[in-house]
Length: 276
Ligand SMILES: O=C[C@H](O)COP(=O)(O)O
Image 1: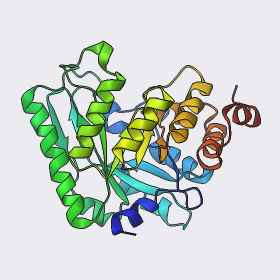
Image 2: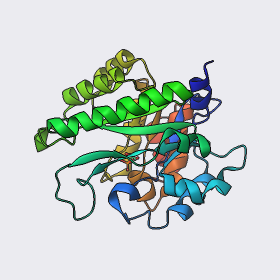
Image 3: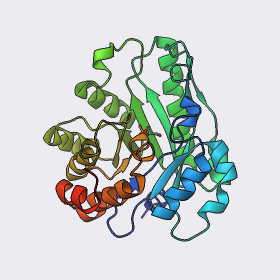
Image 4: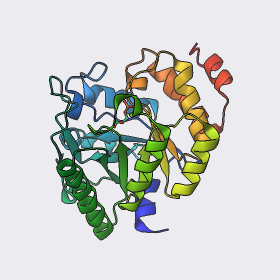
């Protein structure tokens, strides 16, 4: 096993080799987002429930090291960048840049297992180049220091029309580009068709994690995305808002763990954890 694989294994369940990751890095781009007004308390709860990994910002990393001392503590992924200002509350909606907010030395100092950057796609040329440079720079540093790099390609660019922001074909292109730029791990949305997603996961070769996105109307939808993604070969799920914005957070995580680690079916999990 290489050192990158060893580090990645710290965010995976040792028995199933799969992962339920609950990110709490949203404050970086959404500010005081609903459900995460107290990120440290939420993180404590998540750790008590039992998750395999989390994604956190540099600032939260600095104040939460004490929470990760137990041998069962989840692995940690560092969010290293920020697209500006499209997602900032009150922002113009146009992206005007893509900046690193931490470097690889920070990840090493704070003993992170994995680091993560975005690859915003479909931007005007200057911003697109900036994003490529961010990914390229971090990919080179990750190779130098043997830290696995998770890349999340996002179709946020101004040149991508609104109705195409979740287009499966564009997601496939952007994922492929992220791979070509040096991603060791990809974080992408489920494209909606299990057979096609299986082919995508298979072609990409590196471990694929599926993100959750904005809160869905029903829990069944959340569980189904997890189930179909895992069936299609995804290594794990990275679900944030759909988990900690849900009043049934604990039961939902228990259900997701059974889907991801024990191959449970959707109906049985909904019934067992009263998630209807
Ligand atoms: O880092 C955050 C990820 O994008 C996943 O969060 P989300 O499930 O709320 O989209």
